[in-house]
Image 1 (tube, rainbow, N blue to C red):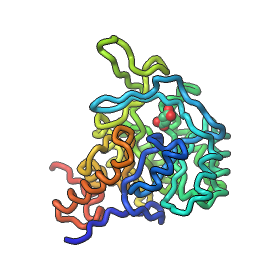
Image 2 (cartoon, rainbow, N blue to C red):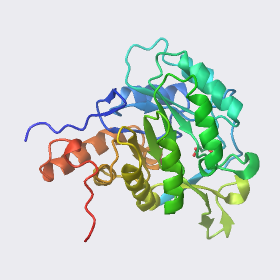
Image 3 (cartoon, helix red, strand yellow):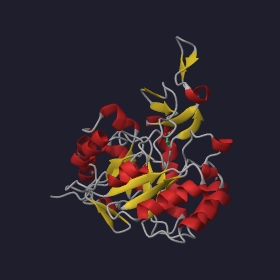
Image 4 (cartoon, protein in one colour):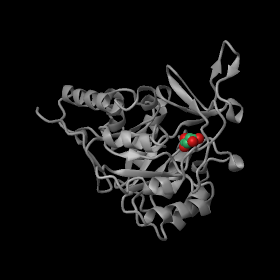
Length: 313
Ligand code: SIN
């Protein structure tokens, strides 16, 4: 078999590789975004932005260990205008996804409206799942009425492909409720999952938490969350309309992990914790590993096995 095809499409947006960064991982500053542009990632997504620049939470706010990471970043970002104008004078282009995370309905509407005026932005990922912003101590992704109302308002005027970054869900009632809502709107994709909220990691020598904000509680990502990421990808693959793509995110450290996400139904994948650990060269490594894995399985394209997870009878 000659060429293994790992390209993919999300709502008519073509990605030369199905592997991209996760929002939040090394994608906040100009240098980080330029590095991503030059890399072999199939697309780029920005750090979730707000209308005005935010410094985020006090440090230390990110910690990683062998099996994962914990963060309470507090949405540090340069403000939406920086991300909207970033591509203006840049020739080389790959699909550019803007992640937005307004702190209120009004701010979310403003961010969507602003980005609709920029043709360089290929798609929006609405972050409904930041675990670290404690306005009302709520994660939007768990508030089904509010999501429905917000989407209603957004789709009154929005013209861009829109995806939603979801928090992890753990029971069928929630999977069904959120899927019923999302299926009513012209959504292009969902990204699942964001970090698992309210984890704690302990430095046993100091007998202490490892991050400072929110009394040490934060979102857990990395290797350790893969089973939950896979279950969410697979649940949504069976519950959402077939034209809604799923971007798998969570626990990817190897080509085999990507294969598993695609087998569960993912159209593309995002890499967060391991990208932060390993840096920009990760995209070449993962691409090579995925191609070898697919070749060894005698497939020629990710579409040969996407969503074909067998269930034990
Ligand atoms: C943060 O900036 O606190 C993390 C954002 C997220 O996980 O959505």
